[in-house]
Image 1 (cartoon, rainbow, N blue to C red):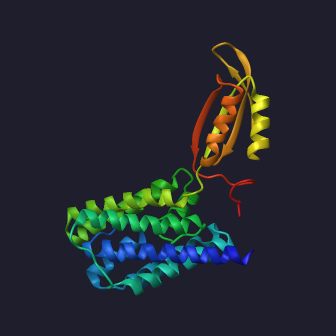
Image 2 (image 1 turned 180 degrees about the vertical axis):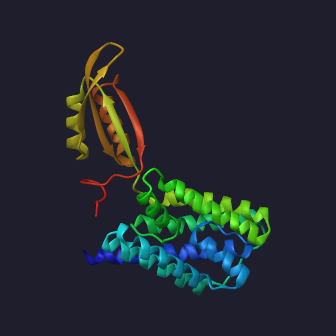
Image 3 (image 1 turned 30 degrees about the vertical axis):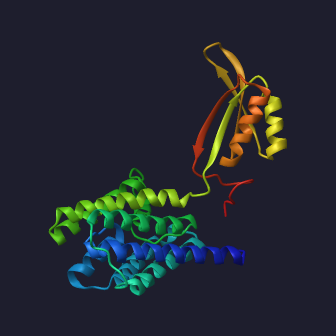
Length: 281
């Protein structure tokens, strides 16, 4: 494995863990917002009993990894354990530095935003900070009919509900749900940032010329799929190619140059692995 990739992974996981810790310590904890997952449990235990969040996160994630380590490859396990250790470290180092408590809505949104950015950066390197995602993976492997998303939802919902009872506040519980939502949406965007591409499907009588020009001019592969137009019952050739956002305009210009009557479909693709794009490794 190349050293530069290992260094990039360690750097990204460190930055992601730091940002996640800042979101928790600066915005969520000061406002009694336990935004699901292991960090949510740690928040409740810290605010109710004074138990160290860093210690709780490290121990609970350690238990989860002990049961779920077989689900990850060797390097993935190392990266995920590093993410957990770094999160615990940064939770301890950043506590008490700053706390925002002026507006619950702002706290929930920005706490969720920072948490999502941190999680997204970590996940983008194939790592995990443990918690609900690892638990969900274990449960879904044991119970095939249960999806990972469903387990994460239930896990977070239980933690949020417990926090509501612990803090005797429906308001804190609702803001925790908002923080989880913002965090999840942000993490999804950050995890695939810069990796999203476009899938272009083209139906044209000039498919050979168009395909040749895309291959020659953009150095992109083109796949030909046999299709049948049911309106007129005609056999057609549909071209499919994956291009970056920057290349989309060039593809459309190529199509227009050969066939202004071509039928073109453009779809968003979150991520592509393989030759010409991101390495599967």
